[in-house]
Length: 104
View 1 (cartoon, rainbow, N blue to C red):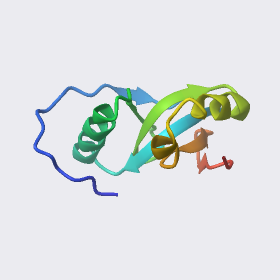
View 2: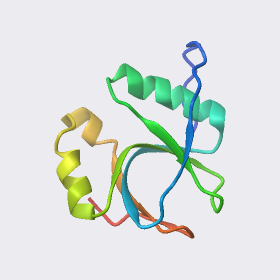
View 3: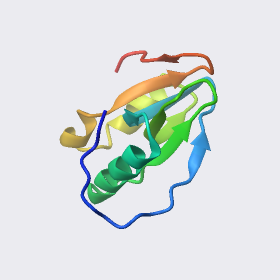
View 4: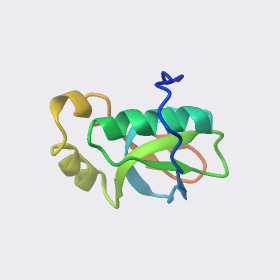
């Protein structure tokens, strides 16, 4: 996924290691750090607080809003987001070797 470039000032982005067996509320997945920065800026414009996660097994950056121990907790949190934001989100379980979308 290629995010548009709005020529916004560069901000430092902390890269988090994805925690196996957690359910993440994911807003986007991109293949490079420059795209991750652009998507972070877009999400911040929507008053969201995204984090960037990666793993040693994937060559992608996951932009996520939060993570939980159970799918039910993640689904409950998703109810707090507006309809426009919620429609772009996925619940993703990261298990360390593959990423599974267990459904919404």
